[in-house]
Structure formats: structure tokens, C-alpha cells
Image 1 (cartoon, rainbow, N blue to C red):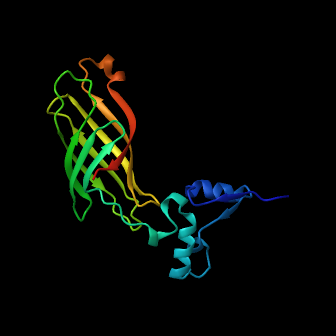
Image 2 (cartoon, rainbow, N blue to C red):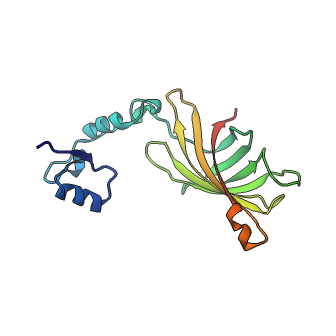
Image 3 (tube, rainbow, N blue to C red):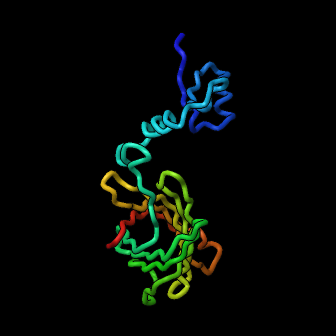
Length: 186
């Protein structure tokens, strides 16, 4: 009888235990094998470099940290300026949307966010934009910064936009969702 092989890298503990009980062979990363000595730092780096997709470069040495500070433009023409990322990952800025469903003139809106600072530079982040100057809505963005093999930074984001509605039955149409890709300007 052949044994099935599963990767335990992303399985919750309960699933891993259930899989083992059902006769599945679980594969773990080097440091997860019980009773085995810890891999050397050099071996760990070599192992990590095999898991990076080709667009990320060939290992940690080739990936420069992503810096959110600066001016970014998305695929719809909206722009955002991140002024500075603090040591704890907090940042502030302004968002200049190119699209709106309001009849009022579009104005720059404040944004506040937090970036997860990690070792390999492919950081995750989230920020909130308050459209208080021209709209009764708020948007939240979450995303990740990628440094491609060409060295260009790209932000892949997903967002939720909540608009104010007057009646509870209209609640179903108050939240929109979407995705945007930002590239650095200049």
C-alpha cells in the first residue's frame, strides 16, 4: 500500500494529527523533525532560498527590503504619499483618489497605517483612508510589498470601502471590495 505525502507547513495542528492518524506521512521543515539536530545557519539559508518564487530573486541576499516611504500610483491613477515609516512600522500619509462616486470635488485624504517589518523585506501592511473631506466613507487596504527580480517595488493590495447609508435595509450595498496594484513614482 502506498503512503500519501502531505506538507505540514501550512496545516493546523489538528489537521496534522488527523492526517498522521489516517496513515499520511507528514513532511516537515528541517528544524521540525523531532530528535534531529538543528540545521546550521548556512544550511537554513540554502533551504530558504529554494522556497522563494523565481520573481523574488534567488535567496535572501538578492532581496532588498521594501520601503513604503514615497509616492505611489495605482492602476486606476490614484496616488498615495507615505511620509515616513517609524521604527515600529507605523506610518502616515495622504491618499489622492482618482475615482469617486460623490458629486463633491475630490480632495487629498489622510491615511494611517502599520507595516509588518520582517527580515526578508517582502513586508505586509495595512492602512485606513478617511475620506472625510468630501465623502461619508472610509476605506481599509491590506497588502504586501514585493521586490521583483528587476528590483522594482510593487504593492499588491485588497481593499474594503464602507459608505454611509441612511436605512438599515440598504446596508447590503454599503460595502465594496476591490484590488489595486501600486508602483513607485519617480
